[in-house]
Length: 99
Image 1 (tube, helix red, strand yellow):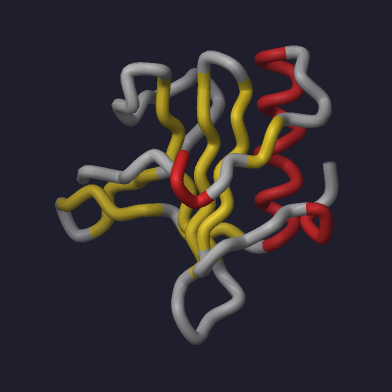
Image 2: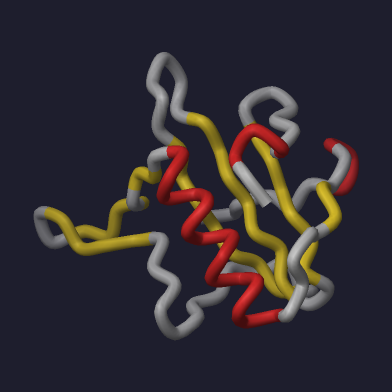
């Protein structure tokens, strides 16, 4: 799946990988995106080799992704889940990043 195939609704795109949901949020006035991974309990999760946050100035901050970074993340999830073309969620199905 390529970046230009993603459908962003109000700056957000979420991909359903059965047990995991991969969420991208566009940063306003920038060509960068933040990423979060949720499980079916709608809670953020950490996966080996999949980093969405880092420590900066002694606090956790979201990593900002480019379009190429997003395509690499989708490729990682293909390897993790075996799903090449995930379902794109509609806005009423979006998972909310509570953190």
